Length: 343
Image 1 (cartoon, rainbow, N blue to C red):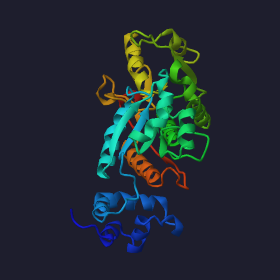
Image 2 (image 1 turned 180 degrees about the horizontal axis):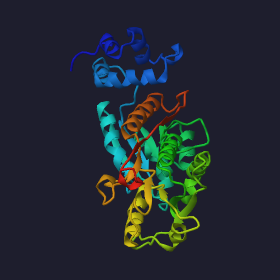
Image 3 (image 1 turned 120 degrees about the horizontal axis):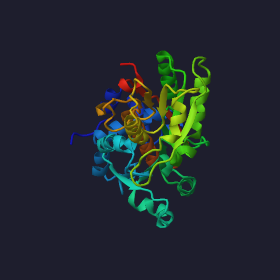
Image 4 (image 1 turned 90 degrees about the vertical axis):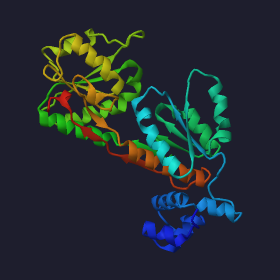
């Protein structure tokens, strides 16, 4: 490997050699160098062989090399977001020479509580995704100064590192699109299992719609799914498809609910979008290939993965004791397809 030189790294980043030296010698915080700048220096330094150069000199690298694996704790692998972001996270960690592994949290497994304290033996740091970031896990990891960050998890405390999709920006995109289409009567669809977690999102959607005069107050439906075949009961939605409400659009909060809902509507001879339009607040596998391609919000997977990788690496470098905690929100994009009635 080519010998590592600070000036080469500084030239590629467009910064001074002094700045690079301060970061690599763990003096950046003392001189007020921004955290995002530090992360860029560390990421490129690793790619250019800085840690290999350290080993050759017999020095101890400032980032813990062993076990050298980042773990991601997820509530389930049967989730389109988790499936979508994994390749981007693997690529991000591979580029800086770290391993990456997935752990599925089973809330009914009593052994899980005992495993929390053993994570350090296997992982240099953890990413807690979604509802896997429960209060108990966070409390145990914080007490032990264990390096971790949260991904796609809304928290009230501001003293944790969090990387999220900007839900408020996504809701504004959807609201503006619905306004441009002229729809007035909207159904917000979720399911019983997810409803308690969806309250903040539903409140934000209703609040945003209330500022648009042409849109009436939406109706919220919590679908009950059959445990055997994932079917939905048409009776839960039937009364809202005729006067006096006469829904014109269904706004679905979760991508996995779109499939049985589309099947239900088609089975009842209701055409999408001719009889009722549909938008999903999440992207799903095969949405572009469905009989009626689905309009949806697409999460910035690449941006989320890159920011999460840099943030957890910064936490590992600081042994979980970093002074600065950041909450990063990245805006999604609206992918317009036939189901909303635009095309």
